[in-house]
Image 1 (spheres, rainbow, N blue to C red):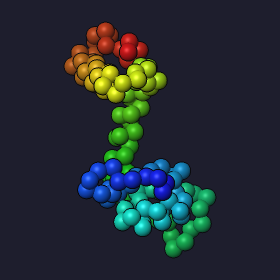
Image 2 (tube, rainbow, N blue to C red):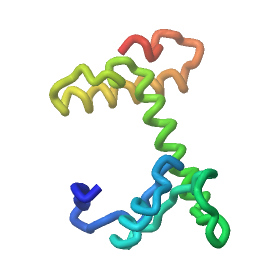
Image 3 (tube, rainbow, N blue to C red):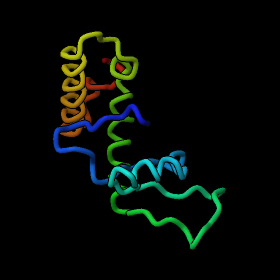
Image 4 (spheres, one colour):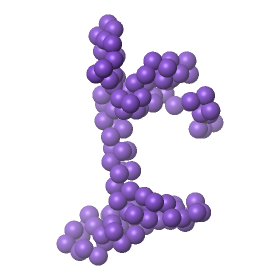
Length: 118
């Protein structure tokens, strides 16, 4: 994790969400030293100190929305396997996947816009 650099000019994010697989003292300490709040639930096999380590449930639910979106995008085979070598082409297919999704929401009876087409 020491190779991770701030993703934007403003610096590090305020919160970092992760699943229980990232619930390690070293990860929590890394985040704490950089002034970030860990939104990571504690694993059931960890020693319970003064009770469980609390996490922001509302922020953790927002993480779920992102995971569902990524999972939905991976349904498009072309995006899941990343055939495209150029970033421009890849982003173009991401936009195409979103357009197909919206068209399906507008007219669910039309099966022309199935995810297996991409």
